[in-house]
Amino acid sequence: MKNIPSRRGFTLVETLVAISVLLTALVGPMTIAARGVFTAGVARDQVTAYFLAQEAMEYVRAVRDGNGLASLNTDPQSPSWLTGLATYCESTYCYVDAKNNSVASCSSTHASCPALKLDTSVAANPFYVHGGSYSDSPFKRSVRLEQVSADEEKVTVTVTWMTGGLSKTVTLVDQLNNWQTF
Image (cartoon, rainbow, N blue to C red):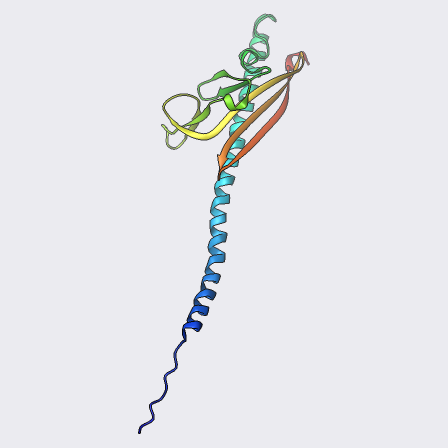
């Protein structure tokens, strides 16, 4: 009889061990990559929320400055430094639409303010606005003025949104003064 050389291959156990080692080596980086994509989305939303809060704060400053300049050019009895804001935002919540130059009351809570809508009519330069038939965004923004003294207001801008099933918030607080009194 002739000797047939024995052929030796991988056993089933060796194959399963090799596959499990390979899967372990692949799952770690894939998990890290997936978490990185999620974190990038959260960071994008947080930056957007901060810019939306800053936009509302700048709008309030612009109204104050515009009223101050208008009263310098006319008699001292013309608009108060808070004309256009105090009616809607003092001791209650309001929302501002910087693109459409409007302010409106929400109610006594931030939650009652409407969500911002994303106006993509100019694709290269989209805006967040209130109203219109644009698509809803996840962001809700409110402004609140609290009188500190006759010539000082505390301005609080809050932006909330949902991401990954969690509610997130950005809040900016600033003190504004009637610069005409200085």
